[in-house]
Image (cartoon, rainbow, N blue to C red; front, side, top):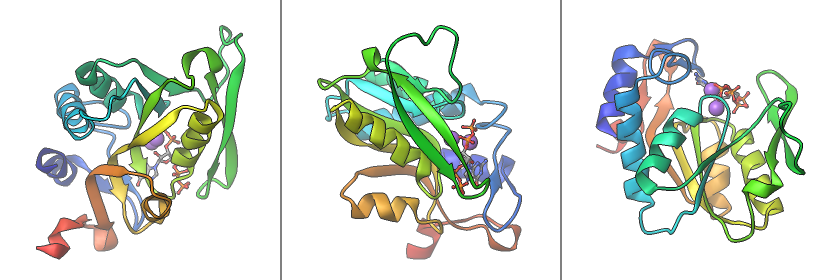
Length: 194
Ligand code: G4P
Ligand code: NA
Ligand code: NA
């Protein structure tokens, strides 16, 4: 997605060979117009898939997920990392393992809000090692819902999450694919094939 790539070049900061900071439009401050364009793009790619629910993970997945749900006219459900006072229903739980932090976070979704009739589109801001995606897939499976695919805003193809998911037959649609962040520069995948 050209608009997103331009934004990454203009406003993203390469923090290291593996981390891109995008807190001017996605991870801290949010650009609503860009998010709407992102939502329209995901909606276009999944418009024929009879999505009934979008599932994401708080916090940074919520903005792109909501915009996608707005266009597809589906509810948007986010897995919570902390239990809320009002989460008194039965919950699905899964664990997200972070390689960088070397710790596990439990994520939860109410059983009332996801069920076997749902056709689910997962949305997230980043795809790195794929641990967050695996936890969301686990929750979809626990609910015996149908997983339609994943919509990712920024995929880092030099980490193996995307490869692993695709090898398992999961449809992954990424709006920007980053091949490398070496030498402080962002290289997108399509620069290589052109
Ligand atoms: P890891 O296995 O390499 O540790 O990464 P993991 O996929 O577990 O992601 C940990 C958090 O870091 C996630 O956010 C993920 O979206 C984010 N992340 C991964 N790679 C990058 C990157 O290159 N740049 C940025 N900005 N974020 C990245 P989270 O902890 O769930 O936080 P949030 O959703 O509340 O923002
Ligand atoms: Na994040
Ligand atoms: Na995230």
